[in-house]
Image (cartoon, rainbow, N blue to C red; front, top):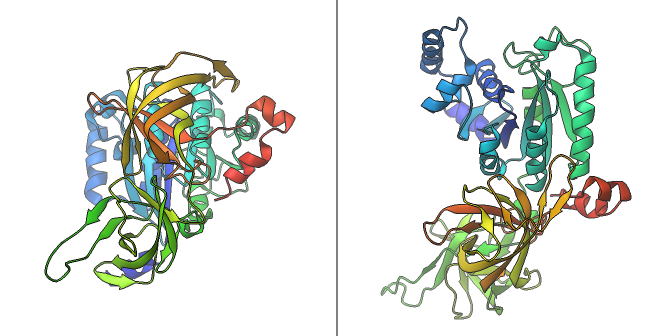
Length: 447
């Protein structure tokens, strides 16, 4: 057991999400990955076999390994995001199996928000459909660094190479217009296991990697220390005991970058400056701390700091603003309207806000912007302008996924209304053809 733990500790972690239209085979693909990589416990497999027999199926339905809700098993679709963990000798994985139905597109935002790779499935019989384009747009907006196009059910089109090539060309062209830097296309049959874990004997014309091989070898960067240093304050520690009568520390998790003792910092939104006098981590004093460590910072000056404030390097602090312009994905059933009063949650800070304008809504068929829609309904992607009651220290989402994102919340019942990305956008097909925004978008993907 110790040897296994030591081996896993030396492997990297990849977070990835699966997406696609209804019945494209996402859950079956995930089940096949788990089964063929020997990541399914015996009792789990026995339960799936029993459930499959009770439904009149001769072979085990591997989709049941992820479709855990009763309604999902009854309908044969994924409704909620199913998270699964598995590992191979080369890498550890956390996967999010997201729903394919248009009604649950918002769930993909949840599953892909922390993903480093998105697997978008396409049924080889149907090709690229509207929901495929919607998922590609969400992956692009969320700045998911790697996208895999898995053309599934190749066994139902006689493993024809021209079918795969046409779908791959159409999707790659569409993804490029969104600013996606690269797409890896893989022809598979999740049901039969072709090119999922083992290479397919039916597609000798394909010389690329299997899905698992690509997941194991795709480059993954967890170096948050290279990003702008940001420390959202979660809690102020003042024990006021005889042992520590003057102790005052600011606890939280470093969102990005690194902090060092002696470094000059700025506290936002007040703009006051000080120097880091000490850093406490796990009860010990350290000279340096980096993301995503949870630490306590002690400053040389007695400054009024509370939960929600942001500590950043004095020479690299974000701009403070009360006017937020962002691209959002609306996730609530109730619409978001101009003039609506909301709460805006950014890192550990929550402030009152009002929706001043909704300039446009994205049409996914041709990536055109519909001006002044007046409102956004569930699963809509659009631009909003929000005015906050108190200043916020936001980064651009392209610079930092953690400090450039926010939520809009219903103040009446706490329902999450909208997931926002400050300043995030992607070039439309017309802009890409004209060359506008190309350099900006390419840089935005360079983590």
